[in-house]
Image (cartoon, rainbow, N blue to C red; front, side, top):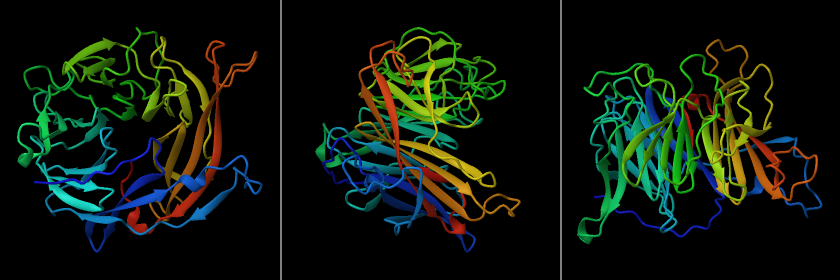
Length: 392
């Protein structure tokens, strides 16, 4: 049994968690680093405010913990759960052999969790109402076994209080209903939206999103996915976490790629744009129809010789966002993996009364938003950190 301590946390986060692949001596381990991003946000009353366009170097802090994998696995996948009930902060690691590790951030303690009911080879995950939902998006996934939730259960028997995996009905596009797979139903994006979760996938034809009219949607009802399965057809599907049922919403796509985050103060979702091909930060009102991006902002412009190795967006609360991009910077490396760096940029979303003629994210004269870029920091990573990375 894995007993977790709890810690009370405020509404605003001050840290992001970097989970890095550590490959040396022919073996894979993983390190978890806690990055204090509070100093990255500038104070307007500071007389010595540096240039927001300048980028300074920062040092990767020592790992808070190190995790190892068994030789027969294909590595770990990392998931994040911020518990609203008690402010607890959990990092959950799973492998393709159904094993689970749970890391309590406040206690700096790692313990074994209960095994997944079925293996998840290419999982995506999101948290809703203190539950962690994990969906397998691999071609081997089957509707009956591909979807589970990590749920805390301790009401009936306090002595057995722990986190348990519970099986959920899988999406209709996972197979043809009798266990035969449908090609191309891979989910490619994830958003944590307060009490709900939204996910999105690239369209089947070219990977570029098209924004089409759709019906209105209550974002607090559950999980949204846009699959690209040949049998189910391109479109958006929702999972109602209360009724535990899937429904096809339409043949339209969400306007994001990667992780999107809700900023409650302006009721807008922020994520990386699917439309411009440059992964710029954009915003959209997903509760309105049609779902069109209402603004695009640049957080960091890399040198042309740098090769992008991934991007992540984390919401810290109070309108503060953290954009983390990974690059390989050695132009002579044909594999584009050497000399990796992580660029961390602090962004802030501010709302204010709308002004006539102001189109900076204006919402029909009701309000406008201003996205402020604060500081960027460059963290140089060792070459043994050149594998997959996660930002939670």
